[in-house]
Structure formats: structure tokens, C-alpha cells
Length: 371
Image (cartoon, rainbow, N blue to C red; front, side, top):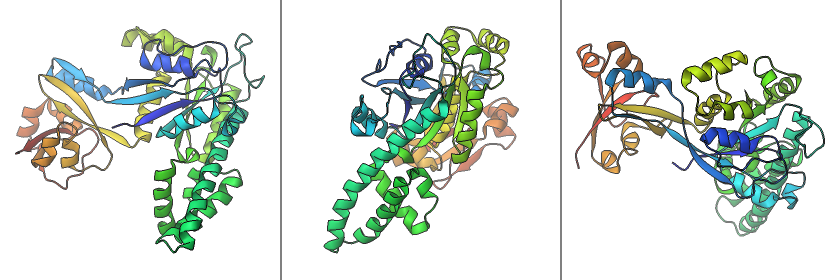
């Protein structure tokens, strides 16, 4: 689907180490100096979903295929990036191509790992990056406003209304507030205009954000003071905070599920932070999964929330949408409770749904089509 999560943060906060653990391979160079990452590394990551294991237990397929999303490890940002400092312009252009931002924040002290700002202050670090994103948006909005002003003078349809929204947005951004928070201040018509403008401009400060609080092993159980500050800061804007130890996540690579659970338990954690990040990122991208379950494979198919059955069928093959007749649907809970498709049918749990059916997360589906 081309939906990407961009991993951002100041230099030396653990972005590349996090990326290595996400991809379960040392694809991104991790080193103790700024701008170690120059070109963005990209990787397709499987979305952990225990429902697939349950379906496979019942169906006994030859293989299991998970949903996937793309993560991009982007070069570290510094103050002045919006004016071209460091690798600023390139960095900002890379973020613009992402739909969700995973902002890794350093929440541990280690004298052997330098910090570009000289000391550990996660809220300051967050504000540095968010300020640069806002400054870059101000420049984008100014350029677009100039063009719209000319169109408004020429009485181009809609130009005056668009310019009015952009003028208000410019004032908002210049007050140091994000484009995301601006959206909540608009009426219905203004919201429609802003959505169209943002689709064109891809405003950096309008993107969904997840904060990844990168801690040392000692803070995987109880939050340290740095994490508490990040949570307090994030609560003001409604962003999610997920705690992880990037180094521990790398150590988990190659462990069995039971070994990993035991290892995390000893450190006071109930789950891998990266698994939480992947699932949360999937949800922030407004994605859900439906399943097909047969002896050849049990598979998770990725669609946008709100898609109707024919559109959902198209991710399997375009012909399924073109020749869609109807869908056979069993809710995941019913499939598991009945022990499979045959008994779900006998129990009346299979439904036949038409073209207007909105697919629900976890539906087990078969499509009938004719081309």
C-alpha cells in the first residue's frame, strides 16, 4: 500500500539500533557519531498478530503469511535543520514521504555515548525536532500562500477560501503550534479545505506521532524520570508513548517466543517494546487485517479501515473486485470458538455479505467472483 513509518530523532538516540531490531538484521549501521545514517534505510516488517497462530492451530496450513508495514530509518536531525543545517533539507524531505513518525527519544544516561546537545533532556530533544518541523511547514505554507494570493486576485474558484485557511494556519504555526493541533480548531468546511491542502503539502507537523522512549535495561520495568517527563509531555497532545530498550530488542533477535518472554520477564517487561510499536504504527496508519484460512496458507491481508468487501478483495487480486458477487464471512472469534469453517457453517456463524459490507478487523473471508 506504500504506507511508511519514518524513524526520526536527534543523532545518537538509538534510531538505527531500533531499526536493526525491527528488521531482525543489522541492515542499518549503528555507531557513536552524528549522521551515521545518511541515506534512509528501508525495511518491510511483519506485524505480530497472535490470531494467525490460533487460526493456524485449527487449519494446520503449509505456511503463515503476516501483514506488513514499511519502516524507514532517517538521518538524525539537529537544530537549524529547516535552514539546511546538518542533513536538514534531505532529512525533512524523507519525513515528508512518511505517513507516521516514530520519534525515538533518548531516556537513559551513558557517558560512553555522546549526545549532540551535551546532556540528557528528552523533552528538550522532542521540542528541537518539533520546532524544526513547524519551521519547515511555515516555509511550505508561505510558498503556497503566494501562489494562492495570485489566484485569488484572478478570481480563481476556491482560491480565496483556501488562502483564508492557509493564512490562519500560518499564524497558528508562527505561534509554535503544530498543524495537527490546527486541524482541531476548524469547522467542517475549513476542515475539508485543510485536508486537501495537507494532501498536497504533506505538512510535517500534521503527521501522526508515536514517541519511542529508549531506556536502559533498568527502566524496562518501572518508568525512570526521563520516561515520566515524556509521558507528561505527550499527554498534552494526545500522542502515544511506547517504552523500549533498543539494545535489549537486538538481544531478543534469534530467541524463541518462550525464551524472549522469560528474558523480558526477568527485566520487568511483559512484552517487547518493538512489538507494541509495530502494532501501534499499523493502527496509526488506519490499517486493519482480514484473514483467509486454508490448508495452503493462513494469511493476513492489509486494508484501510472502512473499506467495503469488493475493495478489500482487490488486495488479493484486482479480478476479485471487478467480478465481486459476495463474500463469505466468519468473525474471528466465531471461527476459533467453533474450531474451524465447517462447524462455523453448521452453527450458522457464516454470513453472506454483499458489496456494501464494511469489512471488520479479524474477519475470516472467502470471496465469490465472476469475471
